[in-house]
Image 1 (cartoon, rainbow, N blue to C red):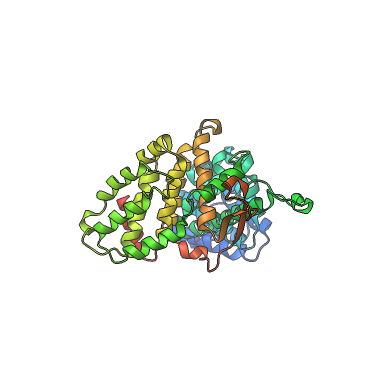
Image 2 (image 1 turned 90 degrees about the vertical axis):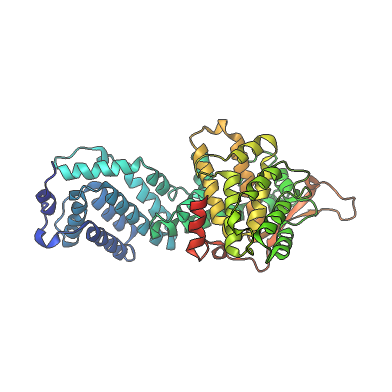
Length: 457
């Protein structure tokens, strides 16, 4: 049995009576110390200190080390594995956030690699060392560590990793939305997710610009296809751009917002059904519309006589997004599986796009639900889930070309010729004027709105 005296007076602590910490005090000692050194020490020295504290649990004589060891031993003495895990997690994200500011990705990668040290699985002669090592080992086999490992993989390394890592941007946004995560973890997740989206956005723009290059110089500048849509990926991107025919999704969304402003909720839902099931938008009659109609009829009946405001619009769109993807945040919804099997992935993708364009603040909720879907299918081998990967790719490309700050258009090469099919056109991209920064699409400032949506969905 681990004795309290063994922990409060570890070898090397000169004045143990002065260093008796509660768990909260011990955590704060560790957090404040890491915050102070990560800003001024070289990354390698910080990594060594982290390893010394959390991985090796070795004894030391230095006064700072004595304080830290007393703190970590206080957590061990309390026998609170959850508190240790939370301390370990937050410590990691404190370092990651600060290294992210300096774009020191190598240090982040080395931090994650520390958890593969063989010493974690080696027994010790001291009971508290064994306890700490067992807790670290448990952490490496947890979902928390899988989330941490997302920060170690660079964008251009995802193709060598598990297929689900290609959608790390959405998995990271799921961490950001989860308010049980520490402030540091949520901030790191938000920042890295944005970096991955920006990189994909840039690569897609370059790929579409140079893939049909005519000059030798342009040919030398061709970039790799950032999608996994296959050999005809460029043609599929053109089909995505041409999916709405002569209609512009953003224009239709603005019309809808203008026509429904101030309507009572009951009438608003009827207009929303018409907007989402427009056969012209979906290239014909979509059977999905009937299922959405049934879902809308049951939404917030107590509000049907109230005018629609931004909060009710957000909650409605979030509920429909959940219905289209996953309602329990774990399993694919019946509507999703039925639509994928009976119609086309693009029917769901375009419907999600329509909802996002009238409710931009639903983006974090949408990406969190996509992350739920990725986690559900990640245990399947890639060969068995090509269809869901195809859906993720279509979603990824569609959101990039319609929601991000680059506008894509199909341009006919020879204006004198008869109108051609999308496959005969060229893709032209340019920055949108007055594009909203990513910060404008964050969670709503009113916490009640989001909390109410989470409980309702």
